[in-house]
Length: 195
Image (cartoon, rainbow, N blue to C red):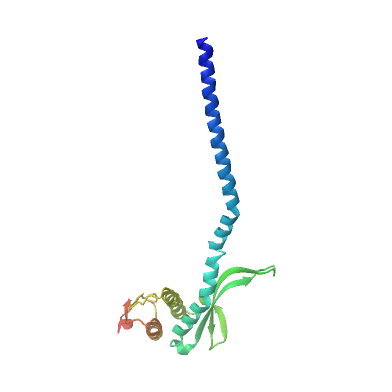
């Protein structure tokens, strides 16, 4: 009799455990169903905040203003000969819509040429590249609304000849003016740039 009572007791305990496990399983299934119902909204949010959502929108929005700032920086260089455009999309090869892309084109008003920056001379590349880098920095400064008093630049164009170095200095002066900076701290490896 004691054996039967022990077995019944153990079976009742197992039944209670199984009922508890069943309740937990039902709770987990309900949580999974809730999470599954949230999944479309979470996917939408992921897409909206991902590279094809807000990030692409921000790049599309920044490109024209950044190019305009770069053009302002380039005006005192080479008699205003160069201007840039930043294209953030291109037509698909299939002709079926547009795709995200980032293309930098440089216009040379002297020759009428519009080309990729890499196809210009080394000195011209250095000046336009620095103008673009500075333009992106100035764009960021404008967006924050924080007034910066000092512009820091590390010479990215150590191989400039004297004439191109003067154009480089003109561009830096324009950056000071556009950014309303009080001073420029400039690291140079060229003696003629520091004078």
